[in-house]
Length: 307
Image (cartoon, rainbow, N blue to C red; front, side, top):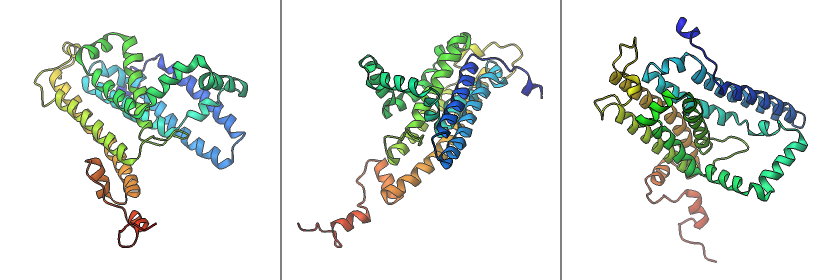
């Protein structure tokens, strides 16, 4: 029981989380004044998912998980899974964008909107936003964040420097995770730019990157990568065994997020493409079977209808 109640800490990001909850609730209240009851109930249901994501973030950064992550590499990997997958997925599904926008009063909201969407002074900000929101950029940033922070020099730097650990490592996992999952999951009013086949290929490719990283830390090496875990008093687990367990968590938990989302995307793709065989043809870049409705447009016998 002491493991659950001891070593909770104050993290500066908790201030940001608390402010976000307050702003979100104010926005929900303002939206409810101008919305139909069913829309208000739908937003409230989404808010619960959003708050689960924020709660998962609190669990990762302020609970004993963060304390023990400094002692054991495998717990650090569990923390990374929470920050890169569980938290961003819940935030994206929770779709907090409109409530957070409506936190501002009408006049302030219009001024901010005119500045960011219309003014010449914000042209660079708009260009940067379009670049970051680009599907391929979001996918690359997410995978780069996961790979870069497992480079031994950067990992050890984050363990020794609180600012780097909290704001750069943790922040990049959450932010790139949100950008990544916005390309996969609906988050009203934001919709993914690409269809189900692109989503499936992206999930498979990202899962392959995580698998290769996990294999590199376990079966493809015979030494511990991280000196910061080499000399921790009281820890009897060898650094390399610790690293292997952490790699297994990254490997297995990667499948936990990939498989359910992939199945959902494949069902969506099968509905759009006509069958799963057409989906797999698209995934491996082969020619696509002609769908029955396409044949009907051409004619009963498949010949082009004369003008």
